[in-house]
Amino acid sequence: MKERDILFSPNKLGYVKGVNRPKVDCILCSALLGEEGVDNLIVFYSRKFFVTLNLYPYNPGHLMICPRWHTETMEDFSEDEVVEHYTLQKLSLNVLKRMYRPMGFNLGYNMGQSSGASIAHLHYHIIPRYRSELGFMDVINGTRIIVESPVATRDRMIDAFSEELKDWEDFPYESSQE
Image 1 (cartoon, rainbow, N blue to C red):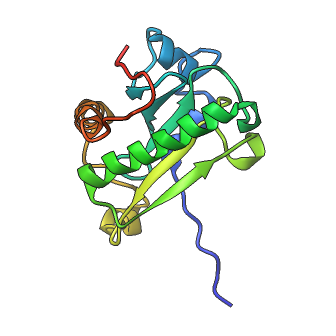
Image 2 (image 1 turned 90 degrees about the horizontal axis):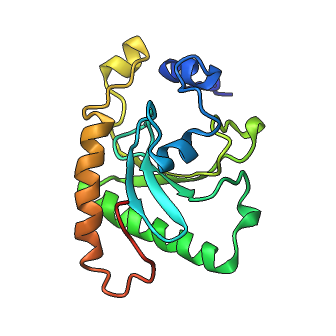
């Protein structure tokens, strides 16, 4: 029987414990409102949702799709919101494929504190995955190297969403960079 491998992300521990986190009620609501002291990594807005980069990405291009209202569960979505959310998933996947050419994706929610959710605002992860993700730093030092800062990624990704929308003549939702 193979021994279980364990993945660690020690750089996120302070954030999860609230040590390195801004003192706000909800980090995603605060980013959406543009509150001072909160990193705004939002790359796209639709009518009911926004797409943001993860401040502590597992891989370059790690996105999250979040409702523009505070909720902790997807059961609150109307049928129209479910369709809009799915449309944003497709749009986001297309953007990531153009930008990074990943070999695959991890997709999903962490709902509730016991699921590993460190933010009490529903968010859907889209994580690009690559064949050779681990380098010597991961193996020897347990440190993940992300070669681009989230702010630089944000600026490039905002442009990539605008470019991708040119191919979506029938994008059914209001979109703007508020």
